[in-house]
Amino acid sequence: MSRANEQAALRMERLAATPLKPVGAVSGRGAWWGAVRAIFSHREMLNLLVRRDLKARYKDSALGFFWSLIRPLILLAVYFIVMGQFLGAARNIPDFAVYVFAGLSAVGLFTEIVVGGTGSVLTNAGLVKKVYLPREVFPLSSVGSALFNFGIQLVVLIAATFIVVKPPLHAQLAYAVPAVALIVVYGTALALLFSAVNVYLRDVQYLVEVVTMLLFWASPIVYSWQMAKTLIPSPVVLEIYTNNPLTLAVLGFQRAFWVAGDTAEWPGELLLRMAIALLVGMVLLLVCHRTFIRLQGNFAQEL
Image (cartoon, rainbow, N blue to C red; front, side, top):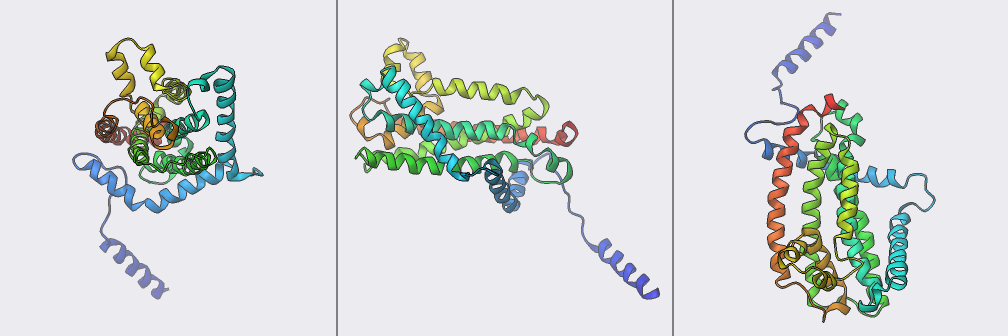
């Protein structure tokens, strides 16, 4: 009995000598840098959440991950047949299938990041209430799973360019890099912001779905930028339309993978426009993250 008491006393001494470490969201000065370090220290948990999202999405389905391949192909077939052939959009756009799929891949990545990220904190309410984790890992896991699905679509897109015997072996392929960067930066920024606001206002997730649908039709995916230039008489409105980050990303993707469009007319200084939009997006990402940090304090109570 006395030996047990001695061991208990030693254990208590060791516990008393152990320095306390603060656990929870960092606030005040240095909060942003502290949050970034916390995310990095929980990178293994982020990796597990991405894998869990991918497995849960196709759980118990016979085809599993093949659905991530089948769905965009069916969507491509619908747009190609209905918009391209029946409505005649393909008449003035050579290799219409490649043109449409390039735009669909870009907008699909953006939509999946923003819509998935918006509902991510609510979806993981059980974890938020029971375990401390940097809350940012939930919308960031949506970014990771969206990039995985995008990688599969990119392989299909490149295969399609070989099928039409026009592989993207040209210098314009470099446009794909800033295009993906634009989508990831703006998508992550909006996912962080909307995931935090959605905890307090649950209507946000439905509003985001509507807005992303509008952004799809506001981007030159099933019609050309040249057509939009013809139909928009105001130069100011055309500049606003063209400099929309999602439009720039779609145009960048089309320049990279739609070889038949090498002779088409494109907005002037497209790379410069993308670079400026990327810088603005980095600032937006910083602002949205700081807003997330401010709002996350009452997540557990609201959930």
